[in-house]
Amino acid sequence: MTVDVRHYGAADLDKIRETILDLHVEVRHRDFGLTGPFYDRGRFNERLSAYAARPGWSAVLGYEDGQPVGFCFGTALAPDTKWWDSMKEPLPAETTHEDGHRTVSLNEIVVRKAWRGRSVAWQLHEAWLHGRTEERVTLLVNPAAGNGAVQARYEAWGYRSIGLQQPFPDSPVFAVMLRPTKLD
View 1: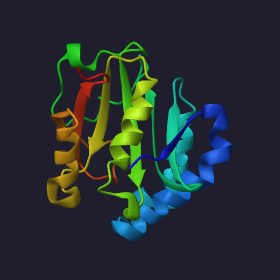
View 2 (view 1 turned 30 degrees about the horizontal axis):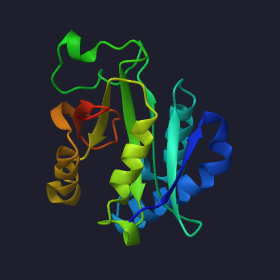
View 3 (view 1 turned 45 degrees about the horizontal axis):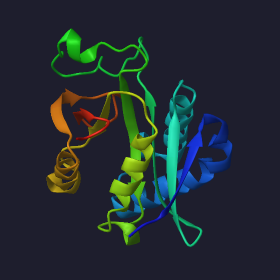
């Protein structure tokens, strides 16, 4: 399946914010039952605003017949990033050194239920990465999500787990995954 993929930058956030928030609630709350303060619409909106305020933020949204089916977004890790600070076990400096151009973080990827299992997530992921200039991409995944199926999907996409972290006191402990932005 091929969806119409549209690219957005931080200047476009006001145009796409409600779509992203609505998809977040539909997928995270209704489909996956993720509730509680960390997953609330308001808290997610705060994180979305914070991510989009950072240099290098970009997003893609997928549409079929004009209907939004999913999104992904992320931003470059700045030299003063806190991304690596909440690791359960510290990583070597050569892994965590950032200069604002080395690593991009995939902060969120969401696909509506009717479009899952049809390679839409892969299409959004690759379309988003296509325009990135960083050498590697990192993401956080709950290892328990889908009884491990979500992390396995990322591994099939070339990511490898490099440790665990809990970035917020009320968030789950996530597996930190890393891969090159461009695969051979």
